[in-house]
Image 1 (cartoon, one colour):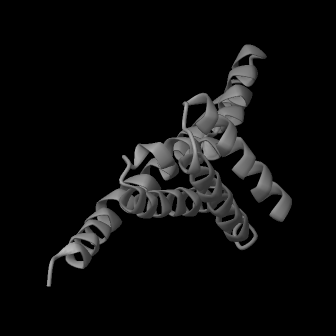
Image 2 (tube, one colour):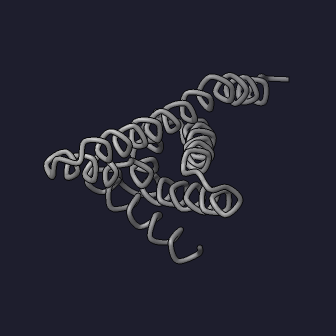
Amino acid sequence: MIRSALFAGLTTVAFGYLYQLAGINLWIAGLIGAIAWAGATVMGSFTHTGLLPDFVGSLIVGVLAEVAAVNKRQPVTVFMVPAIISFVPGYLVYQSMVAFLKGQFNTGIRVGFTALFAAGALSLGLALASAVFRPLFRRSKEVSQRPS
């Protein structure tokens, strides 16, 4: 688990570098990606479906990206986009297309819907983190900055 989380963090750093993130923001995004991958891996050991770990991982990405955005005074997408890349179900879409090209339409549809549901779980986790935690973090930051 630690090795896969490290590789997920390195993947996040590489994509952050491609998106021209610099300095400490690059490493914060990498840490967010590694923590989210570890959380998703732990959740995956308790369930047989891939959707719940994807949801939990994207929820962790969303919450930690919101925290980092408030603390570093950066847009949340600076941390969210590179950190979520490891969870994108690209291989499932590839498998679906290969199955369609081989004429295995039932397999292609099944794997394609799995990829679609995985993308939906990712979207739901990020949206939930933004909708619930953003107002909480913004409000707590405003309260702590008020003059006494």
